[in-house]
Length: 262
Image (cartoon, rainbow, N blue to C red; front, side, top):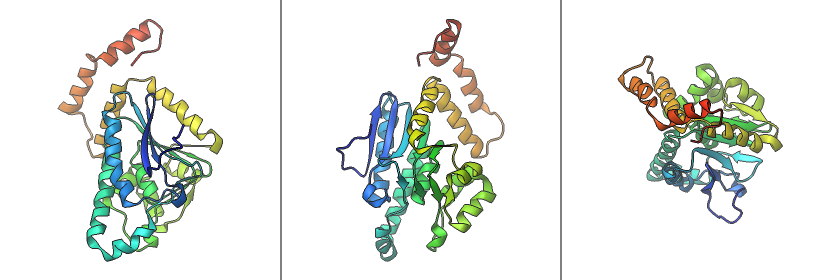
C-alpha cells in the first residue's frame, strides 16, 4: 500500500521485510530533479540500517509511469551555471552508488515509461520487472549530451556492447518485449499482475538465506569488475558460511522437513 498522505517526491516505506523506495512526482511524470537525486542516499542508508528490511523495491506511486527521466525545467540552469551542473552530477553519482552498493537484493518494478534517469536508477538495481506497457530509452544523444561511464558500464553489464550501442546511438524507446529480448529487464507481466508477481518473487527470495543473497550479490559484482578465479577473500566467504547461523538453520530445517526461519 502506498501512502496517500506524503508530499515527499521520493520516500521510503516498510512492509514487513520489504522496503519500498517510491518515486512520487506524478504531476511531472516522476521527472528526477536534483533534490530527488540528493534524497536517495539517505533513504537507501535507512533501508540498509534496518535489519527488518531484507529486500528493497524501487517503484512509482502511479502505475502508468515509472520515470520520464531528468527534470527538463532544470536544464536552463545547468547550461548557465557550471556549479549547479556539477552539483547535479555529484548528486546523480551518489544516488547511483548508494543504490548499486546496497548489500541486500534490489528490484525495480516498472510500469509505463522508464526513460533516461529512470533507466539509470533501474539499472542500479539487481533485477528489473516490467509490465507489458513499459517502454525503455536512454536519450542523451537526442540532447547533445553524453551518457556517463559508470552508467554505460551498468547498461553493458545487462545487455552487452552491441545492444548498448543500439540503445545509446538510436536514443529510441524500446518496447517491453524488446527490452526482455535484450536482457534489459528480467520479466514482463500484464499490468494488472505486475505488483502481485513481484511480491510472489520476493516471497521466494525471503525464503532463502539473507547471508547467501548478500554474498551472491557481492560475488557477481566481483566477476563483473573483472575477477575470474577464486582468491583468499572468496575462499574465506565459502568456508566461513559453513559455520554461520544461516547454514545451521537451513540444514536443521531441511532435516526436519520444514521451512527455514531466517
